[in-house]
Image: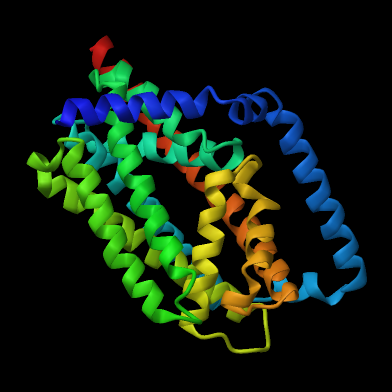
Length: 308
């Protein structure tokens, strides 16, 4: 049963990736990224020109909020490592923790600065070459992760206006995701299936807290955690159509479209977006630099040991 389901899943995935719209996007993704980025930055320049105090407000969130964001993003990177580790364990493989963390950092940086979520592709190629992990196993685990991520965030969209839909969506979504994992034949490793699900829940919660801190830090108004849940759901769903680095412009579009659900005004969305992208870009740059130093030190130590 599992093999037939896998074959149908592969056939549908192949049909989707070879469909005309997907082929058109892949053929024009660089142009699309440039168009979206240019449009967003043009909008940003005009909006900031009409609201000159917004930029000062965005960068005056205080050291306490900056410290909180730093701690939260360190924890989020840890959840990325947790996703990688559980993905590897689902295929009964192992990777040294230090190497896994470096792979997490490099693929996370690529995922932010590169279009179309390039991080998973980098991890798949690396794991195939390093530990022989099959693309099929990695694809199944990644689809499970994305499915759980989509179900949770899709349900959170209604946390502020219709909490019962959120609860129902989480229950039904969990059943669907678990059923899909059973059909794919990976429930014999239920410990790692459950662990990956827990990591996704923690990751979404941490991202919600990040948005909660940001929208309250850049605005004089006070926003509830329920609003932050809806805000986070719409912001995170934009990652599935990310044709620009960090989903710049795409996320804002999703947030504006979902305004009636989270009820966060445009000026707060723009200000919070500026803070988030600026801070996260600097954070990833620093993390990449520190990780590279540790990586180089490890290489030099190996060279010294070889010479001895």
